[in-house]
Length: 368
Ligand SMILES: *Cc1c(COP(=O)(O)O)cnc(C)c1O
Image (cartoon, rainbow, N blue to C red; front, side, top):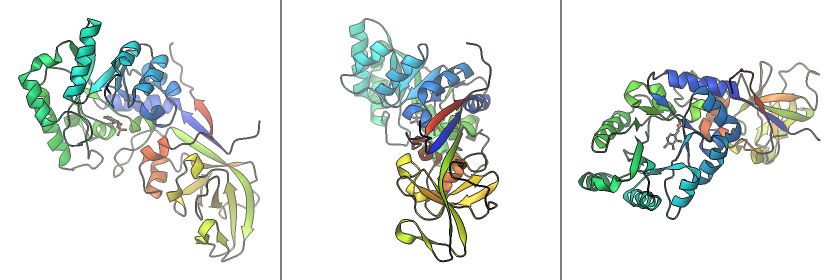
């Protein structure tokens, strides 16, 4: 087998440690785990059992198809489907034991009809909109529901939830406004555990916590509040293979568009990773890699399958083709690459490419 262009190592122990850290921020509050988009690109089949063993019992994915895949991995978990119930999907939800996040009255009616047909109570999560204007019940629907509580008959309300819009910006006035509105809306609904906090909300503090936490990105080591130091353990390492080394004369250009010119003599390494691997093109001339503790600036544009690093700072002869450098690692992780590429760690994680050789690391002992 030819060697891959890069090796992605996913540290499952670090994911478990992050779960425990987040859950520990709110003692007595249940901590769900959001594992949508293949556990933010890290592999739900590997990640979800680790979160289960760390204590998570409630899980969220975006789509019903993701829920069906997760059910095969976690037979006992509560699996909530954030995108809600689309017309005609109820039978699939029943077959796989999925809990829809009901986002409007139409979805509530559809699920209640399914309960009637199945002649049993069906679990449900209700979402209310408190400011995202994306998914969830509108004030008008709350009023209708308050006047017709029988519309929830046959449903076993597992949770009422809403989603924070600005929790990544500490002190943003929208957060306390959403907290207040959410509490008011919940008071109009039958009693159920309330959930508002995404990762940033968990870290912001108890006023966001209610009864169930709902972190995603922080489980995977992404810092949800960029202006604050991250308390989380990094979970990914990406080692890119050196294909070629060269020395270039001053003023030679590098890459498409000749966007970089070496100010002086430079040594370059070409690495077998590009935007087809999800290494964002916006990182061109911005990002860094590391060899041990030595920073290697990315020079020139990101190509489809290649990037070019300035390795002049590494002692001559120390690097050889076939060796690797850290594109993500202990010195430079998803938060730093996201900052340099002008994006958020979520996008770095979910773009991690299918061509990488994936290795999962798990040293921790655990009971079956
Ligand atoms: C994705 C998502 C989360 C998790 O958000 P993070 O910022 O990754 O912690 C929680 N709730 C909802 C509704 C989501 O869509």
